[in-house]
Length: 278
Ligand code: C2E
Ligand code: CA
Ligand code: CA
Ligand code: CA
Image 1 (spheres, helix red, strand yellow):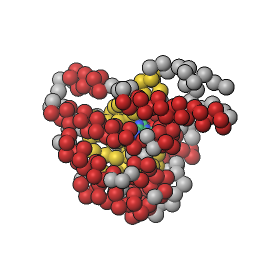
Image 2 (tube, protein in one colour):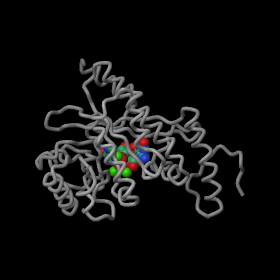
Image 3 (tube, protein in one colour):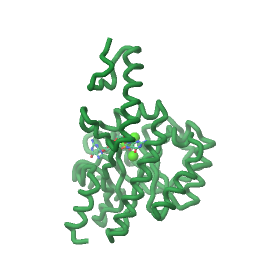
């Protein structure tokens, strides 16, 4: 058996008992993380390739763990979702991302938007709409600068309540993007019913567009679908100039990826702007 007081976290041990035990330990650590300012938000620029400007940033959560170092959200978000901790964590991300963007607006930086990822558990919480509305009010960020990213699996999981909440959010002027588009298991029918403004092409398609004909075909299809439905389309995971050119040749100009910038600390984004003489 394992030491209860050990400092090292083995996030995904095999074996049921160990796993249950690790989840509890992990949950406690994550709860503390929220309390003790170990969570941080990195920001990744979203580019308009045609105008060569930053139009927004995506807020990406990081856990600066005292002994494990920087822990990736892919490791802790699933557990935060399982335990419900994603609700207070998600609220924390939303509030701090809105505060940050508003501060940049106040400083006279270009009026960029912020995209915040939402988990399905947040739609199941009591009053997601009221929470978002009050954060916008308190931070004084105009709703048009807040974009919310939701995956299609999340949409279909709880469609009645999700639809209602999305309509309220849209009514405020917030726009909603479908994240990881094309990787879910849903039909396309929901695109008609849900108030969606953007499709986000997943990096798993973008990464191989040059080498893999199937991924190129899927990417082409998503772009065309978005254009035909009068939706915006943004590609994530753009790592090379060739990929950027491929997308731009199909009029998909909104892009995000290491080719332009990795996710950065807020200070580094600010420095980027200051160095451009804003
Ligand atoms: P996602 O929303 O699909 O975010 C895109 C992921 O791709 C991010 O990983 C980003 O850092 C990474 N990425 C960006 N450009 C490139 C690139 O050019 N190449 C490659 N290989 N990767 C790139 P990250 O930051 O590790 O986040 C992973 C996932 O965790 C996110 O996937 C999202 O589903 C989730 N997540 C992150 N922050 C939050 C949050 O605040 N709330 C919720 N609910 N989920 C979050
Ligand atoms: Ca996202
Ligand atoms: Ca993705
Ligand atoms: Ca995702």
